[in-house]
Image (cartoon, rainbow, N blue to C red; front, side):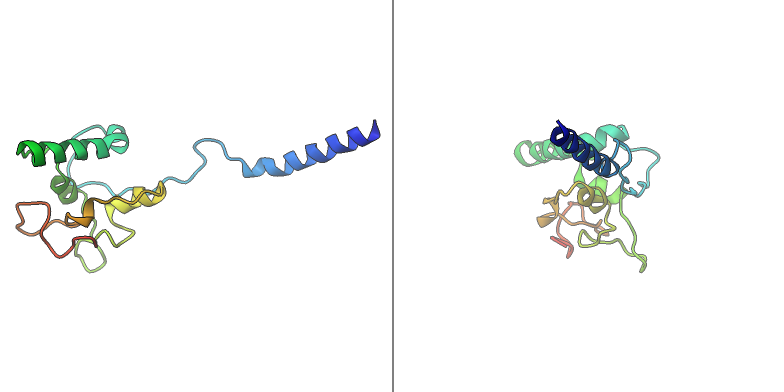
Length: 137
């Protein structure tokens, strides 16, 4: 019986030592998300955080397959509103951890593939969301 009691005490101590390593929901630090330039986003913030990728895919399909171009959920409009300026006063590219998309994507360990083709900064007069020297950067 004493062997079982010792085992229980050892297990109890081990569990007690591990307890501080377990965090409650909400204890994790959240990313500091730069604010957009507009008064409000095109959708509610929580909705955009959960669904922006679906909106962008839908916008892509509408544009590529149906020829329908709108601004509401376009990547170009997102980049224009959520541009982060670097210390030199110019927009940072996707290569920077400060880029708006990288702030959350790094936090959740997801790599966006949009910028393999699209510009990660707004072009000065580009009517399309691609075509500048920031592709893939």
